[in-house]
Length: 233
Image (cartoon, rainbow, N blue to C red; front, side, top):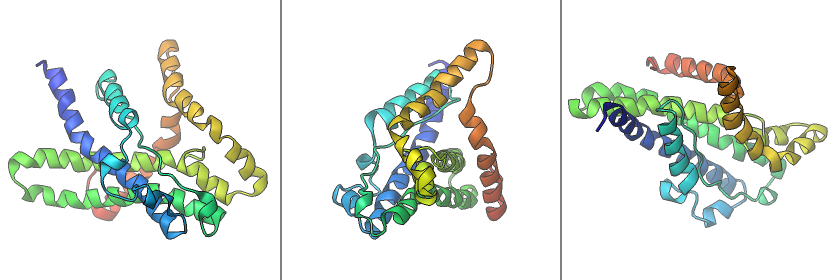
């Protein structure tokens, strides 16, 4: 096997578990908070669970991330899980509680990043053959969870940040923003894939998403490093 391919496969093995756990707990958190606030739709659908199989989307969680990872030679990874079903009209206070349900996913990712950083203290105490793999998993878990949290808080429906914004803004702004949800996924595809590809063709960096999330991601990583005393690579 060529060394380059072997290195890519090793990268997948290190990244797969943290990514699956981050996405799984993110989605389960939405359903858990919704259930606590009056809507048991996700609970009845079996989505308030740590079982990743319940949340995995074959294309979004497995096929697309692997294709992107190998095509970009390990430089780019993006994926998504099956959205947790939430009936916002069944929440106790629909507009207010929508904010808590949406924010629960990114908040869970921040907690996971903190826990992963603290678990790095255990790395020197595990067997040597397991140490490199565990260190790689935990380091990647910190970074992936922070990126997932920040990305999802972009105020564009159907991302969590869009729902938070709709719940907090006055009607004059919230209603037009909510109406953009039907186009939200198309906008994300353009921003995530088409613009960067166009930029590569014309020699310009058009990766707008990276500009948007870079500062908050770096700020959160520095904050976690400061809280835990762990250097994040």
